[in-house]
Amino acid sequence: MGFGTKAIHAGQEPDPTTGAVMTPIYQTSTYWQKTPGDNKGYEYSRGTNPTRKALEDCLAALENAKYGLAFSSGMGATDAVMKLLMPGDEVITGNDLYGGSYRIFTKVFANYGIKFHFIDLTNPENIHQYLNEKTKLIWLETPTNPMMQIIDIEAVSKIAKSKNVILAVDNTFASPYLQNPIDLGADIVMHSVTKYIGGHSDVVMGALLLNDEDLYKKLWFIYNACGATPGPQDSFLVLRGIKTLHLRMKAHCENGEKIAHFLKNHPKIEKIYWPGFTDHPNHDVAKKQMRGFGGMISIVLKDADLAETFRISGNFKVFTLAESLGGVESLINHPATMTHGSIPKEEREKVGVVDNLLRLSVGVEDVDDLIDDLKSALS
Ligand SMILES: *Cc1c(COP(=O)(O)O)cnc(C)c1O
Image 1 (cartoon, helix red, strand yellow):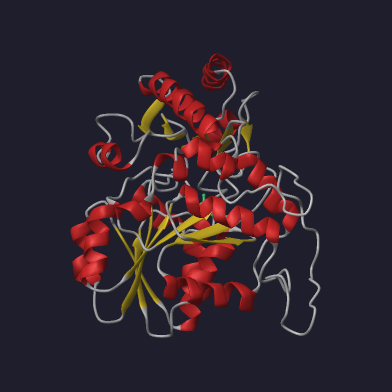
Image 2 (image 1 turned 45 degrees about the vertical axis):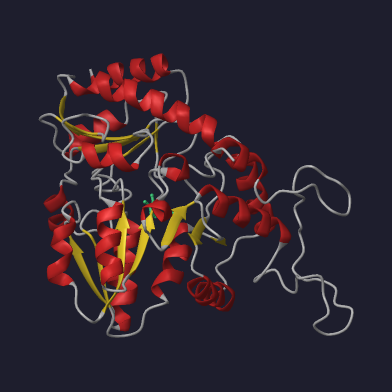
């Protein structure tokens, strides 16, 4: 089945009691039992809810996975993966990560005796020197947020498999429309569903998608025991958002490409990061593992200090200055003080998250209006 057909139908049968074509919002915390334990497959909505189940099955189908687990945020999903680990275990991860991922690793799980190595994963060979018998997990993001590095998932998965290490990929920036990490050898795919999958900036949600039954059982135990699961109303909104994921992603890619080319030679732009450019350092890997280059673009403003960068970021009329990404509306973000404010200045500047870096999430408005907005904001 094609992606669009799965986005619209996977996990979603007409409701057995009424025939409702759209999955109902099962706004219930609990379920009738005939005698204790004799129920219709649902007991309590922290663990299972039919609206959430339809969404989880749909998300799993889009990532070519057997199992799906939805969480109340992307960070809730990440938290569940980290709880697979024990004190003394080690994790290898990238040096350019979503700020919240860096924060939960260094400020929460490091306190429980888990050691993190933040390394340059654009060269997968770098992993070897950090691997040892304590390494239990490799966590990678590609494209990375906000530097748009591309990491070769297949190459990393070969290294992970050779040492029996779990590979988890944060696939938020690409969305399942552009990239399927499980097909490239990853064990777990994580999404901030808040972004492209939800797509309308009205829900915060996360998900884990995977194939291995043992790992699924362990993660389901954590999901139910720790309880960061989303409610039926949010699950419904995401099911509705997903139905146009393929249409939106096509439009994000088209607009992204036009805007990237518009900005490339703009006199106010010092650097631009977008994996679709043939001179992007990891363009070949992007071409190999992605089906398009997406609508996320980072730019460095020429000769702009923090005050000038703030001034320019306040000039937009169509782009909205806000955290988050992946919605239908175009957003602009200042990583150093917004999404990546929790990363120390020295750390973020090492990878290029400088004070005059702006990140664009190109939406699906008319591209000419977006280009006009950029023209006037930059002038
Ligand atoms: C937003 C984001 C997250 C966190 O997801 P939430 O839904 O905000 O908790 C994780 N990874 C990436 C790449 C993100 O952009």
